[in-house]
Structure formats: C-alpha cells, structure tokens
Length: 268
Length: 258
Image: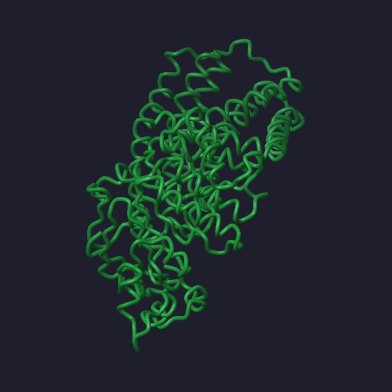
C-alpha cells in the first residue's frame, strides 16, 4: 500500500508539472540564463588583472550554479510540501489518508530528485553549447556519488523546513525561504567558504551544500578520487543519517502541534 | 466518542470552546445527522473523528479502534466530504481521483473501472473527467468529492455540509447519491447539514448542536414529539428554532465556523 502511495505523490506532482508546463519552461530558461551569466563573470575576470585562471574560475562558478540549482530544488520541493497543499486546499485530505507521513515525504523527495536530475541535465546540455570547459581530469563517478549522498541530507534538511508552515501558517513558508537564502550565502556556492567572516564559516559547517560543493568541485576540477572524497562523503552520510530521522521526528511533532491547535486547516 | 472536549486559543488569547463534553455513537449502517448553526462545533466534531484535530480530553473510537492511539488504522476505514471541494484545481477530476485512491492503496488498475462506475451512478458525464477541476461547476466538483470518498470503500462516511451552496438540481443529485450509498453499502454516515429536509429524509437519527454541545439526538419523529406543543407536531425547522433560538437562515449565515 505504501509503495502505491509513494507513486501517488510522484504521479500527482508530475501531473501538476505537466499542467504548469509553460511556467516550468520559463523557470528553466531563467535559471539557465542565470547559470550562464554567473559563468560569464569568470570569463570577464581576466580584465581585472592577470594571473587568474579564468577557465578554472568559470568551471568553479558553473559547478556552483548547477549544483545549487539541483540542491535548492530538493530543498524547495520538500519545504513547500505543506504550504502547497494548504494553498490548494487539499491538506486535510492528505493528512487524514492512511498513507504514512514517511511515505508522503519520501514521495515528495523522490519526485524532487527526479525533477532536479532532469532540470540539471537540461541545464548542462544548454551551457555546454556556450562554454568549452576543461573537464579532462574530472572524476564523474565521484561527483555523482557526492551528489547522491548530498541529496539524502538535503531531503532531511527540507523535511525539517517543511514543518515551519505547520507551526506558523502565516510566516512559516517565508522563514523557509530565508533558510534557503542563508544556505546559498554561507555554503560557498560561488566562492570559497574561506572568504566569509568567521561566524558565517561556522554556520557553513552545518550546511550539507558546503560539503556537496567541496566534494563535487574536487571531483570535477581536480579529479579527486574516492580516497580524497572520503571527507565530504563521510560528513554528508553523517548529516543524512542525522537529518532524515530528525526531520521526520520534527515533522511528526509539528503535525501533532498543528492538530492540537487547529492550525492544520488555517491558511496564512 | 465519549466526553470529548476541545478548546482553541485564538490570536488575542481568547479561548473558544468548540466541543464541550460531546458524546456520540453511530451504529453500523446508521445515518446520523447533526444540525447546528455555523460555529456550533459541527466541523470540529468531524475533524476530531477524522483525526485532523486532537481533542483536549475524551475518547474517540471508530469500529472499536482507538482513533487517538491508532489513527492510521482508523483512517483506512473512513473518508470525508466537506463543504469545500478540496482538489488540485489545475488537475482533472480523473487525476485527482487517481491520486486520492492511491493514498488509500488503490492502484490505477483497480481505480479506473470503479471511477467510471461511480461516476455513472452520480450522473457525472465521464467524458468530462479529463477536464481540470476548475472548469467544473460547484455541483460537479461536489459529485467528484463524493466519488473520491466512495472510491476507498469507507465503512464510515463523514459528510460535512456536502450540499451547501449547490443549485437545487445538484443538491438533489447528491442527496440521491447519499441515499443510494446508504441502501447499497453498509456504511455508517455522519451528515452535518443546515438543510432540515435533507436531515429528515436521509437520517435515522438527528442531533442538534449548539455552542459545542449536542443538546438533542433522536429519531426525527421523537425529536418532533419532544418539542411538540398544543397537540401539534412541529416540523424539523421549528424544532431547530425552538432548540437553538436560531432561524435556519441565521444558522447558515452566522460567521465563525468552528
């Protein structure tokens, strides 16, 4: 029964994506143009002085843009689980169904991964028409491994953020957008974390995106092997092992709170 | 349910008593109607039974299973139709129904023929099942909501004002469908409504709810006898007015749903 329900969530989201297809195209064009613009910053960096390896900088920026677009999709889809259903008015039907919350969030996570992979593939195809990147030393398998492990911890992180609209129908979703923007700021998406002030570097240690980017860049730019990626993968595995059960626990407590206070139905 | 009490704290610290010591038993195959003005606690009653609101005290059992301790087991045996047709508006009726069925473990292969059969019974043009919900009239949306509930073969149906706001034709269709469910299935039904005729015609017992309390719960005839005066048997509307102090119009118009 739970497998059918997981497929139910994935299929429902597919139907919705299909129905909003033009908006999906608009969004894809926007984020691809954004990734191109950011990568061109690297191309233009040589004008500010010599000694800059622009090819490496461009690859560094492009990897950041692509990985962030994928991981932010995971976070956004999961964190909007509640607010989306509340907006549609279906939240009570979903929450009174016998499908478990783990199934619900797993279904949302699975859809997010499929959607994110398709999105990043289209973006990669588009940007490859514009740039000739030097990825001759790249360890693609290593990069995919890091991305896969990072997906799990981001799903857990997203589940924790999904509880916010349950706690506060009025302000919960807004707070999750702030969390998303903080992840972007501190995780070294477009620069090395080392350039940030000390307190931001401290926060960066708790972001799975930091370790995902570290590992993927090392694999793609420097051809780092499994032994060198062990650090990033290890931290991401630990974060996944912590964030997923913690996210489910936090969500369970948030759901009970919403049912006790009557906030499940209330919209913002 | 026995001795169920539920209070909500509103933003300014004001406490609203939604259910006050409510006890209610619905027997297998029985249709129980609850009449009450808006804000009387009918919707909270439905939400407590459907595990969407946790009571402050009291117990809720559905076919012998403790709904507070084993909500998942209870959820399998019931479904609900509420006053708002709660659907993904951009998705078609079919897509919404397939999604709803899957949450109860019903696969597409099982669901499709049943959807066609149920839609035939409720007079829903099957060809329109592929249209987005937002293109359908309110009456048609409510029929889809009934189909969604029936698709999961519930033993307990919670109908929270399913005909409110419908045009007379759709209202008759929906009522006929409820009658058919009652006759064809062994489901127990809790029907919250403002429509006295609907309650009298469809329900084995009718309860009147005011201020979070069920102040009367009897067979329609007995209820009328209870409020009879001057040797004349009142109709249900008069019973309602005598019991609650509201006219039917006031009961439907009053703000502050609980």
